[in-house]
Amino acid sequence: MGKKSAPAEICNRKAFHRYIVLEKFEAGIVLRGTEVKSIRDGAAQISEAFVRIGRGGKPMLWGSDIEAYSHGTDANHLRTRLRELLLHGREIEQLKKAVDRKGFTIIPLRMYFKRGIVKVEIGLCRGKQLHDKRDSLREKTVRMEAARELSNSMRHRN
Image 1 (tube, rainbow, N blue to C red):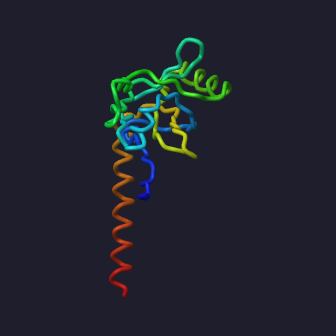
Image 2: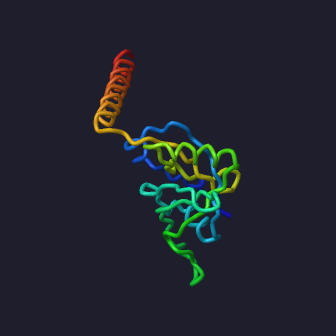
Image 3: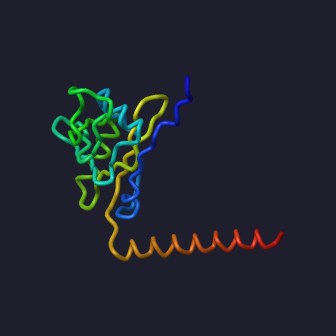
């Protein structure tokens, strides 16, 4: 029997460019069997997704795209259906209060497996202005150049 590869982790890299992440939460997600298999294959995308708290106080994941399972039958799932997130009541209330304030939104940051169960890390975010994005790029460039210089100096020392 062959060794299984490590389960996939789906990251939303756009979120860190577009938003300032103020707080992170770990949420469970209600999925169907073929959705779990597709996520395990890495066939999911959350870069355009967002979370809204619906009627009854249930947080729902909108805009996530989980591809149909390649070995599935006609009972495969819908790619872009709404998916319920599972959070504690106090966390839902905290998110609801924050979103009611202007300029805050809830964005999925990554989707991963934890002890065989799919989890979604969501972030309470505020949108970045253009100057914030420029500052972030400038800081990233400075860090990369410093790391490159350190690497070069270590290499030439020997």
